[in-house]
Amino acid sequence: MHRRRNTTATTAGDVSQESNGIPNSSGDAGVKKPLDVAVVAPALLDLYSVLGLVFGGCCTNVWAYEELLIINPRIGSALTFSQMLFITLQSLPSFLSFTKAHSLPRLKPRQVPLNQWGLQVLVLTAGSLLNNWAFAYKVPLTVQIVFRSGSLAVSMLFGYLFLKKKYTWRQILSITIVTLGVILATLRRPSSASSGIKITSPQTPDELRTYAIGIMMLIISLFCTGLLGLLQEKTYRKYGPCWREGVFYTHALSLPVFMFLGSDITQGVKSLSNAPSRSSALASYAMLAGNLVSQLICVSGVNRLSSQISSVSTHIVLTARKAISLCLSVWWFGNDWNAELAIGASMVFFGSILYTTGNSKEKQQ
Image (cartoon, rainbow, N blue to C red; front, side, top):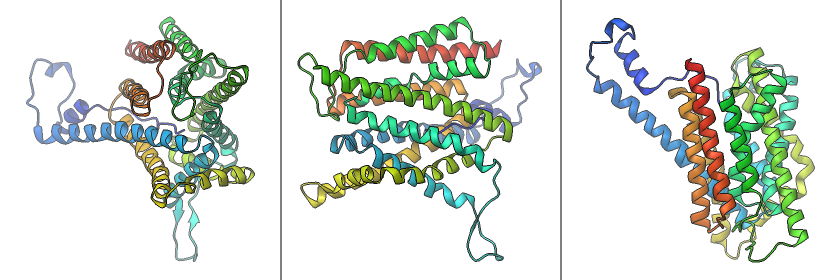
């Protein structure tokens, strides 16, 4: 759950113009300037490499995620703890200061007071745990991918209630389409390889109750994501763009919470070792490592992408990435694909793009 930094987006075309010193004035409108291949080629190559990080890293992350869920659907707590610990250790060196006056390294001065991260830590931890726990309640990854795309509706609701934002009829229409798509996609649970259930007959009341609990977890997780974005926006507005500091401290301060989940984390880690052969156990741990590394690649790619292209283009790329992940889950893992999920997912992706393009046109006007 990472927030993209707020940067002034620059396209590859803008980079080439600025690098060549070509003004964007109307006086040069009728004069064609030759493109400098030496400047344009590296910019395009960098953009394509970033797209490779986003699609390769994020799709690999989802693939490794579902592989772990097939090994143990109740690995949620162990997986969340591993992700929090990995991100903390990976970002720690950037916040350490080494001086001759002290034998041990110290943390660098903070831009944001420590107490400002408290509520964000609770929201981030709760949202991450609920999201990963949902699979133990027979919610397939295909449904979760569609659910995550519904975060636009929650962000819009919170923006209207707490930030007094105004929205156009097109934005309201698009969010309505997204919401209806999410509801439709969850009406009938599809079969899932990760949940270990094939649905061939009407579901029993106990199965429906279990599935409903899992969906409720995803709903609460979705609201946690929206609340986290709201808290981050207020923090960055007050103290400036400090997203790296936010990522480090929210993840580091969440680690003590997992002391209360020790037995569940132990169960999840042991499940990776309980493989029939030593090679299978090593493959399970390699899958966990792949999930953690690919998550880092995915987040890095998204942050770099947002600094090179517009926010609209970034959102469209991420929507396409989610669609590919959904198709990969259905094709690779053999997850069921019913009419409700297909139509609902299409509505969600269409509504997301409609919202983004509508917001772009409004800003241009």
